[in-house]
Structures are given as C-alpha cells and as structure tokens.
Amino acid sequence: MNHKNNITSLNLIISGLMFSIGWFSLRFSFTLLAVKYGFSYYDVGLFGVLFAMPLIAVSLFQFRLNIDRVSREIRVASAGLFLVGLLFCLNDRTIFGLLIAAANILQAFYWIGTEISLSYMEDKKAAEKYSASWGIIGFVAPLASGAVLQLIGFRWLFFISAIAFLVSYIFTPRNFRRIERSVSSRPRIFYILPLLFTGISIGFYVYIFIPYLAKLGLNYLAIGFASALPAFASAVAFAVLNFTKERHIRHTSAVSSILLSAPVFLFLFHDLWFVVVTLSVSEIGASLAFTKILAYITSTSSPATGVFYYESFFSIGLIIGSAGGGSLFQSVGFYSVIPLFIIPLIFVMSAEAIHHGTRGRAAI
Image 1 (spheres, rainbow, N blue to C red):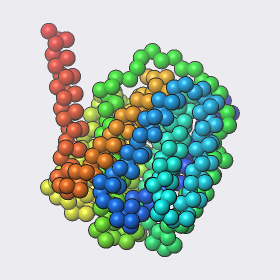
Image 2 (image 1 turned 90 degrees about the vertical axis):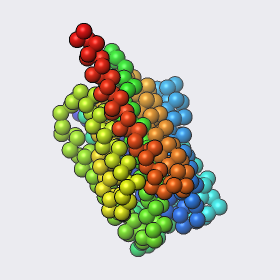
Image 3 (image 1 turned 30 degrees about the horizontal axis):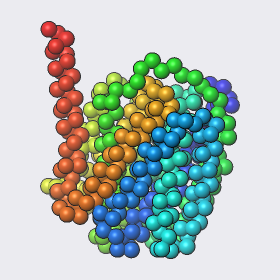
Image 4 (image 1 turned 180 degrees about the vertical axis):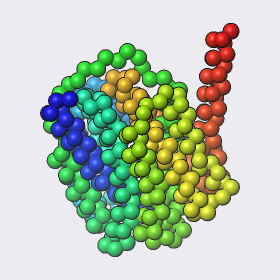
C-alpha cells in the first residue's frame, strides 16, 4: 500500500470514529427525549423507520455517482449534522420530528458514502478496521451520553455531538485514488441474510430496550450503563474479529444467526440483567455480521452494489425490529421477541438442511 492511500484510509477511519461519537450520542438522546415527551413504544419504533428508509433510498441513488461526488457528500453530511446538532440545542419539541428526519437523511449519506469509499482502499482490512472504529464508540457513547445527560442535560450532549461532527468533517479525505477491483462473482443472498437479523436486533435494542429502561424509571446514568453493556460486548467482538482468520462464509453466517437469536428467550425471563445478557450475545452476532459478512460482500461486489445489499438487508431488518417490534411490544410485551428472534434459528436450520440435502444429491 502506498503512503498516500495509507493516510487516506486512516483519515477515513478517524472521520468514521468521530462521526460515530456524534451520531450514537445523538441517537441515544432521541429515544430518551421521546419517552420524556410521552411517546409510546409504537411511536418510538417509527424512529427506526426514519433511520432505515433513507439508507435504502440513498444506496439506490449512489449507483449513479462517482467516487469524487461520494467524497463530497460525506463532507456535506458531516457539516449538515454539525448544524443539526446545534439546532437540537434549542431543545424545542415543535421541531423535534423535523430535526430527527433531517439527521436521519444526512447520516444515510455519510455511512453509505463511507462504505463505498472503503471499497477503493488498498487496505484489505479497511472495512473491518472501519467497523471496529464505530463499534467501539457504540459502547462508549451510551455510557458517556448517560453521564452527560444526568449531570448537565440534553443541550450539552447535543453540543458535544455537533463538535464531533465538525471534527469528522475536518478528517474526511478530499480525494480518493480509484482502485479497480475485478469482481468475478456476486454475494450469495442466502449468506448475507444475517444482516437482516442484525437490523432486527439493533432495532429492538435501540428503539425498544432503551425506552424500556426509561419507562422503568431508571435515571440517565443507569440507562447509559445498562445500555452500554451489550455495546461493550459488541466492541470487544469487533476488536477480536480484526485478528481472526477468515472462515467459510456459510459457517460465519450460521454462527452470526445463532448468536442473533439469543433474545428469543426473553419471553420466559425478562429480569433486567437477563435482558442485558441476551442482548449482549445478540450484539456479538451483529459484530460478526458487520465485519466478516461486510468483508464478504465487499470482496464479491462492485462498491455501489455491495453497499446496496448491505444497507437494504440491514434496513429492512431495522424496520421490522423497531416499528414491528415496537407495535408488538406495545401490545404483548416480551412475547414480541418470539416472532422477531425465532427467524434466525429457522434460517440456520433451513440452511443446514439445504446444505446437507445438496451434499446428499452430489454423493448420489
């Protein structure tokens, strides 16, 4: 790897890390403010739709753009969220929904643009390093945000988020050297389905679990601590996965799906710490999908096509986990986990049955 591209890769990762600080802090506040304003689980779940739909739309839009345009959009998204963060400091309920919509549109351009840019890096581990950078912040942000909210309030959290977006803008690379990759195949859809299950898990974690903690009456510091534990498990997994050998994608897909199904047991026991433990296991499965399956997609697709697969599967799952999960949780409580988290187990059993059936026919 030449020195210039090495710096570009590092800057992109630093930009992603700072953007993650801003975004995860901001997102943490969305659900807590919604509870403070009296929103139901169903209402909060709709925030997940506002998050997911721009990801699908922007990934389709990016098919027509070259890497230089994508780079500019990343910078515009960071700068735009800096301004949105400052507007959030007004703490005005009348513009709350509009600011959430604007923030979700801008973040879609940033994440998707960054993911496309990763495909032009010479560093073969760039995707995994990038995932690890925001994965680690995913643990720190709830803990720090809970402390900030408890001690000095929402306005300071919004201001800190705005500054993080500004730093992200500063570090975003201006120019990418186009690295042509020959793609001789395309990803097998069956193997990337865990990204859908990951969306379900994260939708439940962010848009149901965190509001659930608030409605239990916990203070913001306690909510930050409890919600940081699954993210901590995810951050450790991200760090470890950067040093693990590649395995066949079929095994990776199966293991990720099994881990992602852990919350299905919450219908039996939903003591707070059991909820935390099962979501922690699920977050480890999500880390596996975000690293190894993302790397698999990157290696078998053109940049724009790969990102479309990645974001579409994840976003559909997020809509199911947030809006669908929120509606179910509002009606039947923790029994809602059965239809949400039984799906990954059905997938694994089906995949194994198909695999062994194929091997049996080949032997004949």
